[in-house]
Image (cartoon, rainbow over all chains, first blue to last red; front, side, top):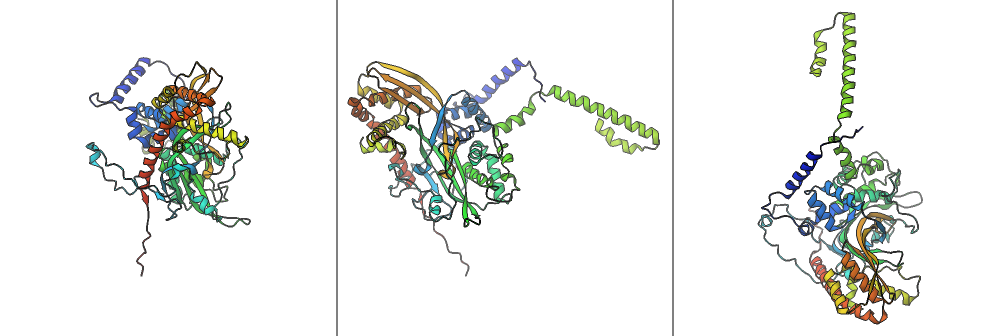
Length: 388
Length: 171
């Protein structure tokens, strides 16, 4: 139990002034601009937007600056900011098939209709520290190539088929399911999660979930704790149009473009008496270029479908209450970090209780010793040490 | 609109306008195309477009620019049931011309001036006599967006990869 405290105003105000001073660092070093964070820390901005559940690169950059680069603190700031804004409504679902693709890879087909483009990736780098960056040397200009294949001409309205839809034509993979356009979409920011949670709600929670936690859970499924035999069917990153239908207009208004990363995992078969075996799917989607998050999310999404697919559920990643109630970094840090706030009264109560228990124990011990008259000094020693 | 503006249009939604007659559908699509350009235009670009169009007459701010949230949604597996991905900041504005035409803007981000300028352009677009001029005034935006997209596409194309499977030397 936490009992409120008061006082400490001057110390708190001074601590925050000191924080601001430390945040700024050495004043002889130029101050970071939000544009610098936005342009040069773009993957951090993407992570903070994804877990902060708010797409606004400028606000995310400000949160990162204010939080001195602490991801969880920056997520906290964005989540707090969002609560101050009214919600106009929900956008039309984004169409990742119409994405302006900047990266698209598949681990399961060498020759993918539309082709594979690596885009800006850390893959295949040697992970050697690059001291030309330390020296501030400009990078060489990017290479250019003629735009020929569908993946590159998507800007002209072509659609990029998903790997799952290619397999789906032969019935080799389960469908993505149907959508009832009249059914409400569950929203954990409006209604507390109740269990069992359906897949749409689980995906919302995983999208906001801490990347480290979701990554570790996804990893655990690969190591055998809820194995799903995954292949990275497709990973694509790029920009999609966001559209919103205001009541006063009655048609979808283009809001602009958002960058997202999508991952479709293809997992081992499932079949039944009625249906022949098919590959199953796990899905991940995140703001910005957030590939690790999207992949881990897809692994955990698939693991959480264990019960639906009639699999044994014994691993942490298959337990939706365990996953959903612990994946949010803000909730987790709130409960862990509250331990450092003053708990004087609480602790005093424990101290009083402990002293009483020990006094009772000592009394019982003395009584027993008096009764037998044969207690050894050795037996009392551990107790005495503990009391010091 | 000229073909170069197509790059600025958002992913066309096939369902749009199915209830209305084809003419109304085309009208809405053309308006959406202009709105899409405004949504991706910078404030200086929108001001330049307004300057090129000359006097607007008296404007009534039907709705003061307001920043709020729109929930972005994905679909399970990319094509299944909708789910909530996360919110985005959106700024909206509504402007009425003396003739009664009301223009709207809903833009990602928090720029009230940009939304106000775009709402004014949307209102002017609805005046039949000014529509072509509004589209001409937005043509530089369409050109810039198309050029930027073409450059990004060429750079992406240079990273197109062909992997070859090696035969294992087992015997």
